Amino acid sequence: MNRAITLSLILSLALLLSACGGGGGSDDAQTPADTVSQDALPEVTADVPADAFPAETAADTPAGESVAETADPDLSCGDACTPEDWLAGETADDASQTGTIALTGSLALEPPVPQIDAEGAGYIVALLPGDYVFAPGMDPGPDILAAAIALVGKDYDGSAMALPEKGLVINQWLPGNDNPMSAFPYLALPGTYVLLIAFQPSFGSDSQPSHVYFGKIDVEAVPAVESLGDVVLSAMGSGPDECPFTGEYSLFSIACDDLDVTAGFKETVTSTTVSITQSDGGGCAISAMNMNDVCMETEDILAEQGPDNWFFDYKGVTSCMPSGCSFNQDDAPCVVGDRKGQATGSIEWTGNGKLKVTASEPAGHFCTDIGKAPTIMVLQSL
Image 1 (cartoon, rainbow, N blue to C red):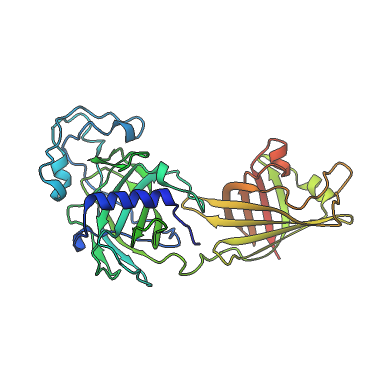
Image 2: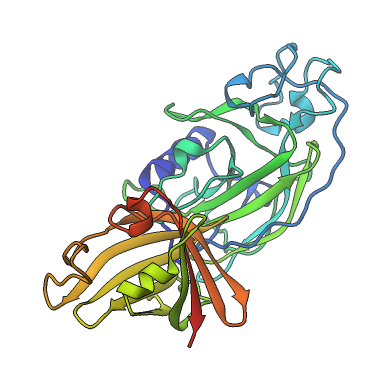
């Protein structure tokens, strides 16, 4: 699916790259991405360095972490600083739990290769909270915990580029600053992060990333270097994400959280059919038709997959036949445009041709209105 990264992140990237100067060699280049690839990154296991870490990271350090005070790191190395250069003072208090994250591996772009028209083009590699849910049109910038940049030169052709052998140091990110990436490495307890990688080929005011990637990275023990392996990113717009659930379905059961309402629902709405097709822009286009002998209504939903769950964009009621009809005397009249909104949830096969759809639907839907979200529908393949 074509997922756009919005302007504030792009401007932040432009500021970072301009602040860091011109293009770098192949050791500095990093990962672009695409319609947003959802592939998980390889599981990483590494040793924890027995060094101490600087104390300046308190604002962006995960809850529960304690960082001992240390001497300021020696920054005389400038752009050539390695993770070890940042580990200035030595205290053993939290060395077994806390460390600085640096990433290594190789990054590549799938065709079409973007036009590189500026020396400052390059990648941003960012960490977001492990439970972060990306939705189309959402700006991830305010949720970034830490980030690093890698510059490429004008002649970059999108082929595989190696990150520095000693790792690309992930620094703290301070949203709201003109230059949001601080000068200090990000310290973290072991845990799971959402990894964002974006490639920016130029920096005009209307510039957008040509490649974007969302994935997962599991930090089992915080090492000096985490290996990403090979990350291949394809261009945004190169093709929509496939919908794995295309087909025709009937309603098998419906529940509001732990309350089964199937019998009462089917007594009023005698037929529910659901058609799931591939959306032109990526994701699944869902059209649900409810009817009985006096009323028929249709409702459209766009479902797109994020890193951890599905994002549902409820387009609302799209038709009422006859206009303003009701399923019974206690039912509100059908109104085109009603029940619009957004939600997150899940879609999964449960076996025997059954598809389970779980979502906390917008206002106007039965389960939400009675305070028993989420709605849990089981659909039977026809």
